[in-house]
Length: 418
Image (cartoon, rainbow, N blue to C red; front, side, top):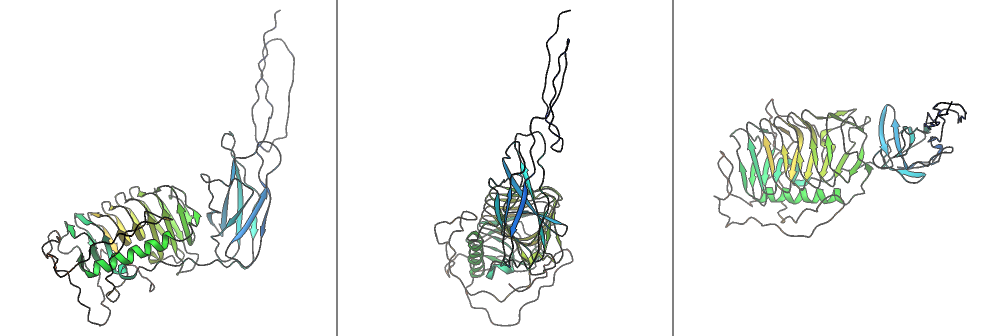
């Protein structure tokens, strides 16, 4: 009888299996399998302990087999899991150590996971590494919003509204002077079109944006925010941010804790997406710094102050508990609910604002914007169906801080003083 050829294949099996081999001889055909290599978990994680706002982590490559492409680290604080060391599945650490700079008080647990991009089996996490002791992180400071804090909506070029929007604070445009489509009861605060107040507000907003851009980038922010829980700190992404579902911000019991989320690109939300605040997190302490445009899907529920270079477009029935501040334009659509902190005394700083930087971590040339003057044509500003007001530079008369009574459909932020 003529012997047919042998067929032999090699298949990778679970990393927990014992290495094996097989050999045989026979007439006919046969198939066998044996383990060729494994991707071992990283081992011997260690930490340099101390009373610091950061912690140094190191580990060794586990066992033998293929060398991983890189690693990422997860920090566990109680039941909250957060990315550590600016790392994540899409932002691997090439070496065997890192420094985590986004600690929260108390004990934290770190898990290091090895990743091999072309391996067919999933990477295996290391054993848990408990970091205990007096961990005292440096708190993230809020940017000073100055004169812009009274504004629910502030745009550099124009504001466009469609439908019944509700705005609890001031609305301003500078150096532009156009606000179209607003109904008579759309704005509970004041409307300022290229006057001293809107000019001061834009100056303050630009200053706050520069403050955030000049800070260290902080922890890595995944491109998809849905299903993510973040503890207080600064987070940054080189790419665009997307929110589908729920982003949870956990203040870990500290009502003064600040969250800064920045993107060198854009921010987009899917319909019905939301930001959920837990354990004392405050809307007044959440800041979004976006170099590009911001666009929300219908029925989105967002929280915080948005500082964007590009246009901000709030989709139908979007709720923003915060502020929409844009160097470009702001568009509102059908029953947007805009919350803002109580009004502060009117600002007197009327210095012309310079150009915003191009985005987080960058700078831009200083080009002064037009300054309102007594010769400004009062017919130039347009406010849709509302009467226009002449720009004024008169000093305000000191008096008690005004109190805004908000309609039931308007969300206001309970804030601490800036």
